[in-house]
Image (spheres, each protein chain N blue to C red):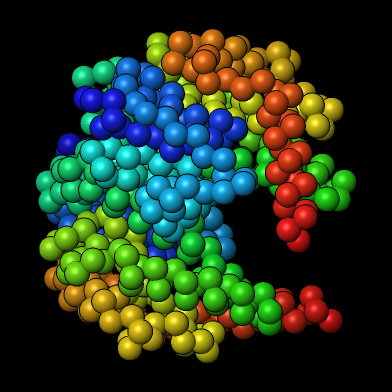
Length: 229
Length: 226
């Protein structure tokens, strides 16, 4: 595939963009990356390719735009089928991976967002408690999904590793901001070790952002939203 | 794939019906267990400990929860009567609309459960969803999926049956036939499908249930204001 055939509109700070990039890396796809400085302005291509949500990531393949990170990951898995598989091969394992990634997006990540935007101490505490509860469930899920291997996906990074692992950076920022430990050897031993393996995986490590840089961006985002209100 | 298929569902739930439709469209034999959502069974709590919700599909003793996860599972295990397009780009589009519906449908719950300003906001958002579907999702096709019903149609099935009951119970008009002609046509086509037609909840019963629930929500909302 010619490089110009595949284009990804993204943002360095976005965990959702990271999902798409990890998937493209796993499949060794050559692609053109366009950084969107979305806090300042959105490119015409982005607005045209994702008119409903106007968000990154957007994958444009052979002029066809695709939106929503996990949908993009599934697309990549289906199109570049000769590369290593991202979704498990067994339908029940696939359902399990989809179930937990839905849990992460619909329940767990929103509590991190609640902490990020929370104004009151009580709201922030409640959000942290929810995140901790979620991590206990995910620690257990890891045991079941990995079946004793290194990743949720088994020997290699898979769909659920990508769905969850993209949030490790924001998780570190949250830990610093809250003065707490969310992933730890004592509370979440399996996830702790998995996090290290995930972050050093060849498909992932070039995409990891510095925690302080992410925290700084977070502050910019908070300032801008406060200014707008 | 002849092993036992069981569905834990609830008669009033559009999520439950999504699974019924997929199973019936594919001609899959299954046992149905009606769940009392006020008094959840031990089987439900055991099979869906995380969310404790229906629907749950139990196949060869293994539970699958979350209606859209169940639908993708059914599609993969029983490939007859395909409900997703073959082409990966078209599949991505189908999944996009399904997710769009899932994310936005929360507004319909909100407008059912609230009063006053909060309800007005939710109503506006709900109208937006329908407008966008009308403008972008059908594109002159009989169904969201093309000329045959697919997962996207199943995912939006609640619009074809539950929405007008919700409108009546709340006293709000969202499905304006004049401004949403494509959606209106889709509703008629969906309801006329021979499988769907035989598998819809009783409207009177559903309305009575929605009226009852709406009363409860109004009471709760107004007692909070006082």
